Image 1 (cartoon, rainbow, N blue to C red):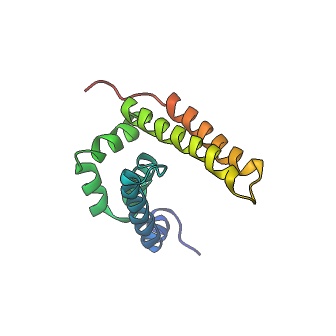
Image 2 (cartoon, helix red, strand yellow):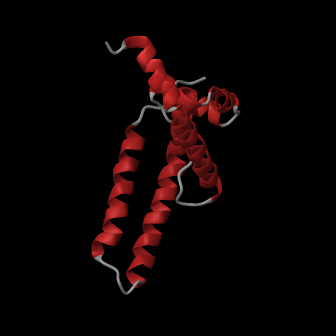
Length: 140
C-alpha cells in the first residue's frame, strides 16, 4: 500500500526543493536587474522570489523579509495582497515608457508586423490595470 498524507507531501516538497531554490534565486536576480534596467519589473520578481524561497530556501526567505526595502513590500503582499502606490506608479511609468519605445522603434524593423507592437503593449495594459486595481497597504 502506498503511503499518503503528511509524509508523501514532505517527500515531494523535499524532492523539488532544488527547483524552488533555483526559481527563488533566478527571480531574485531578475528582480535586482530590474532595479537598473528599464522595462524589467522589480516587484513581481521579488514577490516570486519570496514565494519560491518559502518552499526552497528558508535562509533566503528570512533575508528577503529582513531587507529594508523588499521586506515591507513582501509582507504587504502576503498580508493584504496590496502594492504601495509608489510601486504602482513606478511600474506604470516604466511600462508606459516601454510601450512608447516599442511603438516608435519596432516599426523601424523591416520584418515588423502590427501584432509585434500590439501584443506586448496589450499585455502591459492588462498587467498595469490589474496592478492599479490592487489594494494599497494600510497606513503604518
